[in-house]
Image 1 (cartoon, rainbow over the protein chains, first blue to last red):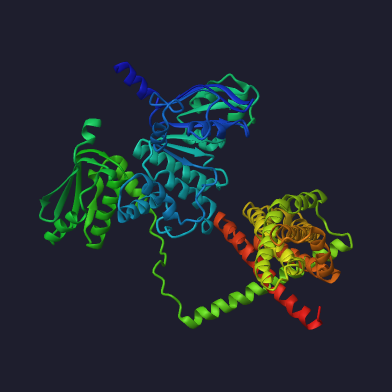
Image 2: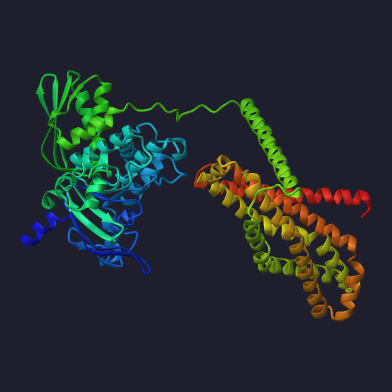
Length: 257
Length: 380
């Protein structure tokens, strides 16, 4: 029992023997890695190798062809539908382009999950929404529609919505895509700050080297040629120690060796 | 953690020095289990006007989430209004950092409580909007005509395969719904006519009535309304979605006119298919009348056929066909116009689609009215 508890603590999220496929077409096979509580974990690899697909498997949008995704030892796809709903409520997801609902204001976007899953009254919801928006630097933008704000702001608003229910785990799909370096850095800082403050586990899909080195505790490297993962570990250690030429080339942008 | 989570959240106060209030937080502060009302803090602060500083003690605090933060924000805001300084030293590390982020960016001034404009100014604004909208419509019609002229001289650029697909979609695939509706319309006309004409023993004239009504009016109009709902809406949704994805911008920057590439094939498809659908609808309507005549009024099949043949002349048929061509142009134009005008969001595409159908139906009815007046004047 004690052993089990220790294991759980170690592997907050565990992906075991995961094979992803669209019909007969195998995208990736035999993925094995674990993510600890409060870790910033990065899924990296070249364009089109299945990073986002892996993320979609982890957040329960696509069922794996084989293998498991475990949250605190509980297998997501073996769980009953209501259990799955409960697990999913522990996730916050920031999609690539924000995926804000365009017919709703920012305040409505953030308040939908709160209305759905808590029994707070409307003034409490309003306060909570204002808090979430101010955390991402959008205080006072409650009544704006997604079409009226910039791409970077949309992303931050998406983050506010992802954080609406104080999730344990935040998933980001290419958070810095389409952002200028300064905004990307600010988003990275914000992610780190949230992790520090709330001990949130963060899973990020990205190929931005600057972000990878700045914020990652651990990462997994997917290779489209062999259709599986090449390695997992801390990116700085990987850069220093990995013998694999592909990993090395990726982490140095192919500029060395 | 799980044992303490059940604990009630506690809020208590202690006077530290003459001018300092210490706020104690205890237990688990989670928004979904109910938090103490904020006015407790307010009352405490008001009870002693000497308070100049507020400090926090959270040693007994076991667990917290955003609810705790919203409470803190209220304390911070109230204190700053009352010119009382707040010392956040006693807060948990995480909460302190989040409070720093949350209060870092000053709130943007938004004018949510706008005063409505006076009546005259609203009327003026609406009028200007109508003028603008009409100008846009005229612009669009002008550009569409130019594209059509270019097509006539063989210079328009669009993909022939697109045209084929659109023709298939708004021609052959519309047949089932056109059959159903026009057959029912013919049936209804025949029934209504039969009941009345039977009173005078003039049942045979059901054939004249159904034939003329279908060929001259109902065939074209029902086809027009069906196609407005079916194809006009589809055009608006397609072009609207392309607008959202910046696909139309991509065409423009490549130097390809969206008018020729997108609007022209849609217009041509309807110009070609509408008359055919209209003729088909006429036939279905007359067929329905035929069944009513044979089944209900005991007319002989050949008798009904000859009566219809005598009543429906080429003038009536060509009038209906001409109308259907005009309706086709109107449907294509309004569908494409609203699609091109669409905003860049999912709801804007919805609005564009609705507005395309409404515009097309209004145009159809209005032009039918104009036709009626002209035919009357010319004695057709």
